[in-house]
Length: 344
Image 1 (cartoon, rainbow, N blue to C red):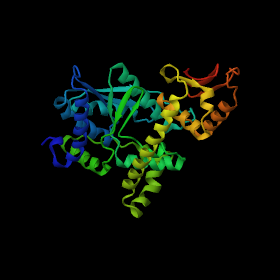
Image 2 (cartoon, rainbow, N blue to C red):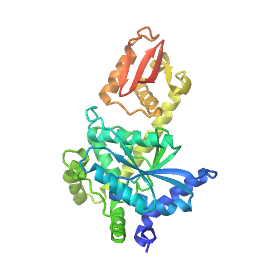
Image 3 (tube, rainbow, N blue to C red):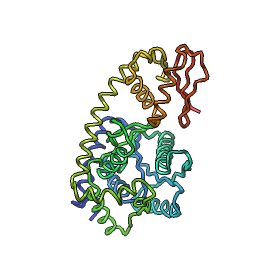
Image 4 (tube, one colour):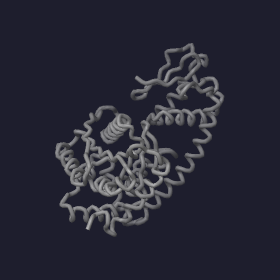
């Protein structure tokens, strides 16, 4: 019996089939094949995603790229990379290992810095290989944990919208077809896969490490939630959907406001004077929206408020050309009455 033919894996296959059908219908003339990438960490989630994708390659004429990110943060990193290459080979695929350097002292924290490095590597690889679509194995448990972490961090409406089934970053469309599936379904499939293949799933020790926020959440908070509110994951998922709907409405307002700001080519600059005609709330929101259009990570609330203050105080004709707002590798400057975005 093949793994993907088992009755217990049907719940994993259907969302993938639905997604791939929609991508195929949107790209009926994809030549030579629909290029899709998946990430493979070697854990149960990504391993089962790869196993589920294998029978889809021929069915949907897919050119499948399997990527493993070598963060270099754990002593086991080399072993994990070899495991992923062996697993992919067993399934009839090739796994490309991408080594990244995590900026541990960037001020973002190790988890966030690793995530940023990972997505940048994905984006660079996909652009180099003309890949538009990337499928991720995030599930309902991941979504619920993300929402809890964002709530504890004080996120606003956009953050509490959680992870989306589809989002764009760095010219790539990321898809999460399993976002409504509980992890238990994936773990059951992983147990079957191990029994059939002999491949064990990698267990990253940082997943339950109290030094990491997500690890602390899993060990200290979630067990109590499971006992007191068994449906907490579904409830938070519903909350995320409502917040995403609210954010979509706010974005419509911001898009309309931005159109009134005498946008420059590529929406890379706008009129400071026109921006100042907006209410304080709309000034803040249109600035956030403008940054999001360019895939720029949101600044902290404190930093955003400082930017707003400086933009309100600087000379509206831009004679004070010394105003430059730095954010990671990006630069926002006021030049001749225009608010301009640049990159270092």
